[in-house]
Length: 327
Image (cartoon, rainbow, N blue to C red; front, side, top):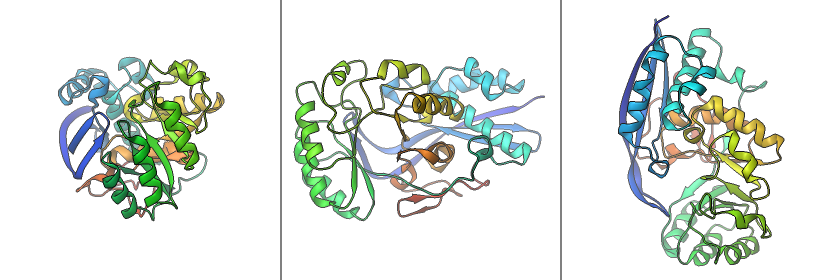
């Protein structure tokens, strides 16, 4: 068996500017992995994330370093030992899922669920800005059932009030991206509870969140930066109520399924999220998210240009991927 690997770097413009507590960007930078075996080709995409020490160059090099194992036919389970968790392994793992589906003629979802995948309601993300700017974003998207609101700085209470006032019919997820502190978390949570917020994501920095075990969770708390793989879960018991699973953190769909299953057994609610990437990155996550309590797979909705073919979005509903895209 000899499989051929190719890796490319691509950039897709974001519609406007995407801002979180750590900074802003105007394009999605992605790495695409292609694995070819005879007439069959599988594709996977990842989004390197500087918060985790990843760069475009480093991720590309990590994938290329695994070329020999890929050429010799490494399978997805063995890949868990060959490459560490992170964006590079995600691209390879998802390319292997796609390749297996094409070679076998059986769709990838058959290895994930007993039932065919269904369309899902995804959150739509509002970029961090002034309360007035965020209210304008919320008003424009008030028809969407679920909004994810980027916060995590000074004046967050004003932001929360502005968004809830502008989109009173939408459920809200607040994503602080580690931007709150021990001094303001309880006050911020109290306002969020008063205004009916459904979930608060990663309020405190990873590794500095022990206080979450000693304060009342007036709104459920979801770990993001604090959880990457299944082995992280034990340390989160009593601190968080939910976990946000992202393929770029787990290092692919294979490891993400392990994380999901163990998290559910431990009593965590499941959120399936994404980095800002194209439909190719979202496609395997749609399969993972079939029974998740919260779905945040809006990456392509934030882009000025997506791949073609891409996922089909009707409002905030995303359909499962067609074989021409992935799986």
